[in-house]
Image (tube, rainbow, N blue to C red):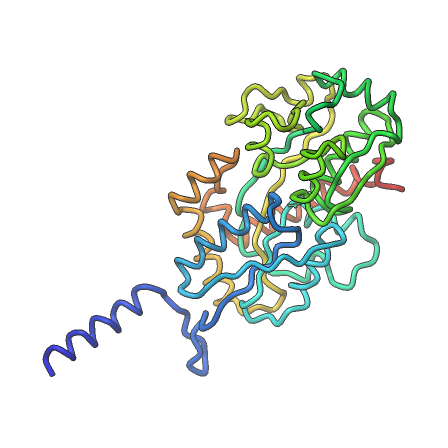
Length: 329
Ligand code: ASP
């Protein structure tokens, strides 16, 4: 009796300690089953890389598997729609990025509300971008690349992940800044787009260091600049677009976690708690550093900070998008 009771109590204590679950009314505890994290782009790309790291770390903390589901297409709007229309019970969340800041202006008609269809749970990270090309492109600096793009006109092609994606935003701002109209080739994510760059079948891709760092370091692509205010700490040799002679456009890809509108506040709070714990994880901190980024501060990994940042970002991009010829097509 003695022995059993002590083991029983210890096991019960451990279970409670291991995965603090939220007691909701009617005895249900959250979470009591796996959570789906929707990634709106293809496996292997930058959003997928960040999402899978977060899902793994949140699984450890929240006591239930956080399972990634790649719902791709239409520049990330199909994945967003999947979550906006999901049951608001905390078991379906969305890992998305700056796309949530530009989609409200870029799309006139959507089957979901791109702003009020979601509960922001907290920001995750901000990732710099890089302009990379197939490695045999006949240019060795941004000025030569610009000259080549002008000479090639629409024979020059540019990959992206569809209207609403960060690669499309960056590509269009680049084309607009140069005054050229390259042929745009959309993919379901920049993971597959990168394979075409590596294969020499596509000319240029503007993509995040979370994916491009390894290919840049391996010399498998040519890199020309980063559309950031400052150089990238892990890739200090890359000039900013302004330094390289092309001022006037900056794109850094912020990421955030979302639940469907109407998800109960205690459930959102439990998901935010798990997000914050994941961002403190040493493995996350180290892996993010290796791929050119870092977790946001704990204060930014909150619904309030996320909503504030997101609202300001929509307002920032609206006039830019409306004034940028490349988006009008
Ligand atoms: N984040 C990329 C983009 O927006 C797409 C991806 O992650 O695959 O372009």
